[in-house]
Image (cartoon, rainbow, N blue to C red; front, top):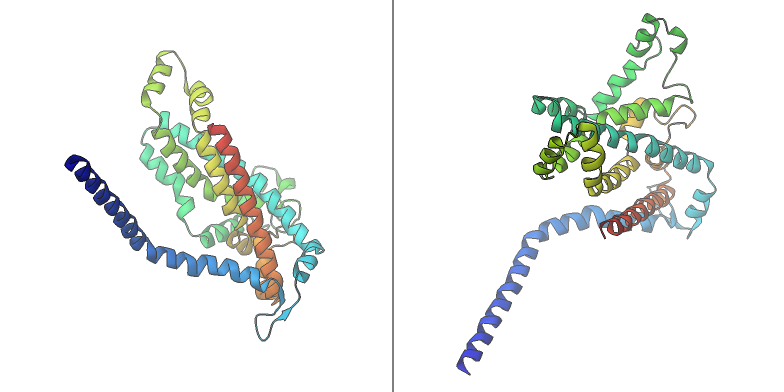
Length: 305
C-alpha cells in the first residue's frame, strides 16, 4: 500500500511540474502573442470591419454591407490586377525555385570556394529593393540604358526598345528582376536541405558511377519534395505582397499592365482614399493566400503519407 501511495505522489508531483512548465512557456511567449495580436490579428479584423463601410479614411463611415465586394467583383481594374498577379506568380516562382535548386546543387557538389559563391549569389536578396529596382530601371532605360546599349553594340539594334514602357515587355522585365533578387534565398534553403541528406547516399552513388546530373535526378530532386512544397508556399505568399519593386520601376504602368493586387490596393487606399473599398480588396487577397496555403498543405500531407 505504501509503495502504491508513493507512486501516486510521484505521478502527482510530475503532473504539477508539467503544468507549471506549460504555464512558464506561455508566460515567456506572452509578449510575442500580444505583439502578434495587436499588429496582425487586429489589423485583419479591422480590415474585415471597414470593408463593410464606405469611408475615405477621414470623417464618418457609411455602412453599405457587401456593397464594396459587389463593386469589386464588377471592377475590370481589379480583374486586370488579379490576372497580372497570377501571370507574375507563374513566371517568377518556378524560375526562382529552378535557379535556386541549380545553384544549390552546384555549390554542394561542383564548385570550390562555395562559401564565396554562396555570398555572391545571396547578395542580391539582402540588397535593398530600392537599390535593385533603381539599378534595373537604369539598365532598362531606352536611350542610354546598359541593355539597349549592349544590343546596339552587338548589332541587334532592332531588339532595343523601351522595356518598361511597352505593355508586351514591362511585366516580363520586372519578373526578371524579381527572379534575380530572390533566387539567392531559394538557393540558401535548398542548400541547407541538401546538407541534411545523408552524405553516404552521395558517396554510394559516386561509387556506382553516378554524376551530378544523375544524383540530381534520382537523389536530390525526389528527396527535397518537402522543401519544394515549403518554398512554393512561401514564394507565392511573398510574391502576392510584392509592391516596392513594381512601384519603383513602373508604378503599375503602362496602362495597368504591371498593376498587381498589392499596387491596386495601395492605389485605391492611399491615392483614391477608398479605404473601405481597399479593405475589401485586402480581405479577398487574404482569402486567396489562406485558401492556397490550406490546399498546398493538404497536398503536402498526402505526399508524406
